[in-house]
Image (cartoon, rainbow, N blue to C red):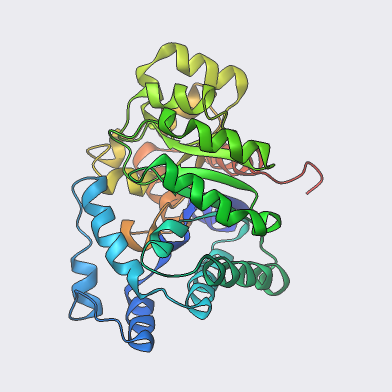
Length: 322
């Protein structure tokens, strides 16, 4: 193992862009499916892996939502989250801020309580048994209506002590952040921080809207920011973090190859970029694989790796002391 690979493996990291439903590996999917009597559209674990070929965000989401159908009980959500945390410990993740999509589950008849209770219980065990601190971020599905998002926010209020922020994910194109201004305003009034996916498939204007209308603390993805010089100057001046997901960007054809990814340019410009794994069960790698493939293709050096790791803690919602 060379020095860069060893550094990537050993350096402490925070992961800030991780959809817990996107960590559902085929083996666990089939195990939970059998437990709950759910028939999957795949004949085997290998067939499920072979189906993970996407040409854009929507084609990925179609499979993502189908797989999530096996998740039904508090135990299921605990097992899902615990499996991710065990993998995170191996990658020396010391802190994680994970997204969950309650609408994906509530819209198919699953109550809000077992979803969040299973995730929360696993996160608590992750802290005591694995030494991984965590925060939970509720994401609204932007392909659904703002009214549906507001209803989800109201469902979350009894659990506000378990949720640090709200976010915005799912199909980006045609669903600009401005549609969700009212629900984000309400979320901030209720004491939640805010983040949002913007500038992956959507244009730089979506990043502006997330910053100015949703008043987000950081941008999830944001890689299209380089198309707007004024936006880049703002991101640098205000040190607004970008939670970049290299393998996800590659799998969804945001960039034709890892050598074409703009992560190194973002760092060189002084943007607070971080590396994350997004939906690792589907995109071919957890955080270490994202670091390693980016480092190899973009010729990242030790300073780059250290900067990315430091950025991940600086961009987190941890206290300064922590």
